[in-house]
Length: 223
Image 1: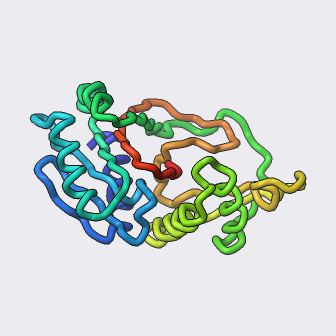
Image 2: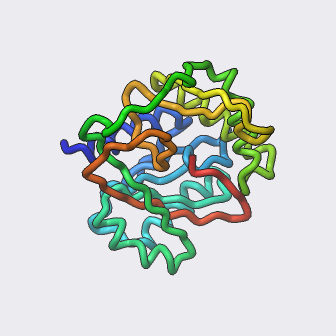
């Protein structure tokens, strides 16, 4: 198993632990969390056996499974890069938006030292208000229900893997991040879809996959 496969396997194991139910279908499995139905990162199809599948086949499964679950969005994750490339155009014709995410393998030590004296380990309760303000400042944060569910999602994910929170105190004027500039890390490093590191990233060997999303009158974060 190469670095890409190990990273995907770890990500999916964390995702499945947060699911209320896992629904198998011909080309993979669907993760469902009805309690947090406004969080697409907890409600999506994983298509990992797509050799003979077309975008219309996967769309039909999304309609069946996510529709039955009462979800207002449709999302299909295709973790195999060649398959994702093959299906991209057809998903676009069906009204889906392709979202590419990249996994970077950490191969060497950082190339310079960074002063971390201002950084301290904190607990979730201390970090939560800053995270809440940050989410609320985003376009998808206008709905208080989305904010609440995204915060609950972060706590749910943290319960399934050993998580540590680090923050640097800020003296900047009041802003979504004024109290704390928060960072999250995991003992088993999860390859996040967005890099928010303020230190030098020493990474090589990138691989990318895609998720295909169709929303129906809802907004959400891809955090």
